[in-house]
Every structure is written in structure tokens, then in C-alpha cells.
Image (tube, rainbow, N blue to C red; front, side, top):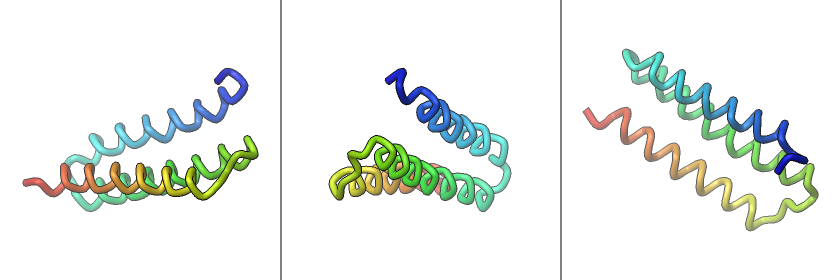
Length: 83
């Protein structure tokens, strides 16, 4: 894990920016949707780049990141539009 510490710092930055943006734009559902969309896409791309650099990118990993991005996206959109 320490070998890829910079990768995990960037992932942490993506997730922190998501939380901050989600709450900072709590007054506007469209902005929140944009934040969630950007973070889901960023997480997916981060995973691809991370595993490409590690030279272990394969279809299973690609599908895994796509599914977790989709699950997170759907969950947060449901939270945004629950009211």
C-alpha cells in the first residue's frame, strides 16, 4: 500500500471533494447530481489508471470498478431525490 500512496491520496481527494461538494450544494439538487456524476466517473477512471500502472488491469477489474461506481451513483442519486 505504501508503494502506491500517491494513488490513494488522489482517491481520498476525490472522495473528500465528493463529500464537501455534496453538502456544499445541498440547496441545489442539480449541482449535487453533477458532483455525484463527476465523482462516480472519477472513481471509475482512477481505478482504471491505478490498475493500468500496476499492470494488472483486466476485464474483471474493469467491471468491478464500473459496478461500484454505478452502485454509488444510484445510491447517492436516490438520496438526492428522496424528498
